[in-house]
Image (cartoon, rainbow, N blue to C red; front, side, top):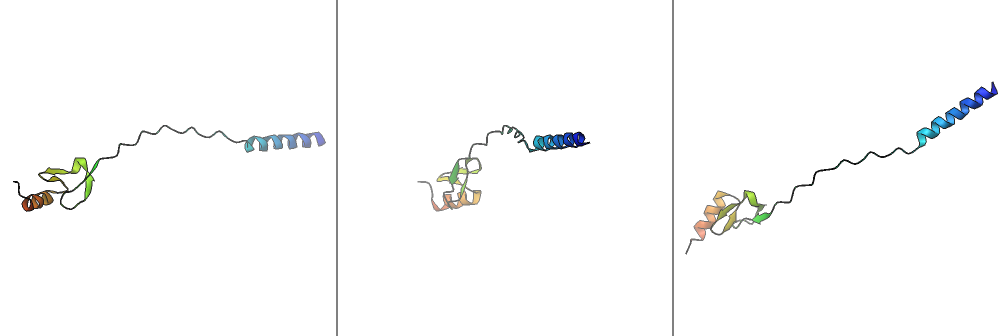
Length: 79
């Protein structure tokens, strides 16, 4: 009987020791590269910064809207 109890204690210690082992950390997955930052331009009328692909070109620079382009070109006539 005492040997059975000793075997059970040894098995319990081994079982707990196996569970206390540090587990291997999961491998980090490769992440896609973040997109390149957009070039920002300032509106010639109000100074608002906006991405280059959203800017409207005009006579005096780039603008954030058609209204600002028209207002700038109205106040700054071409020579």
